[in-house]
Image (tube, rainbow, N blue to C red; front, side, top):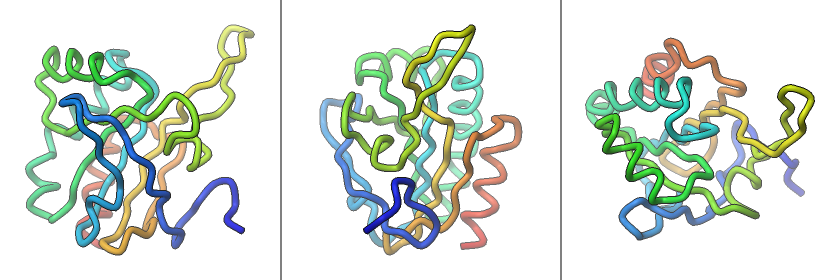
Length: 158
């Protein structure tokens, strides 16, 4: 029985995500290459915008290193499209299903609280997945500054 929060060495759950183009994508689609999944709380908020811009700025270097990138939030595909256009993002984005999605399976769709109010939200987390689909590295409760570069270095070392 797998723990509620898959960790290093575990196979990434293969749950389909919606793309802004109207299709779907799932982790197994990337089998045979390394994959970075960066989960973030919400499109067009300051930290999430910076994180997406940082990954987009390094997208070419990730590609050269043979690493696929995918940014994921619970925002609907239409909102992703606007976010991508507004900020000229090049790192691909996908939408996690409202319920029983990949974030739920990874234990990062979690209870948060702000100003005394409790709500469900995304814990900013990044997963580096090896070519076999196993989790090679996890960054939890990510601080955005310098994060994309740190993930790139780890991906190159894998």
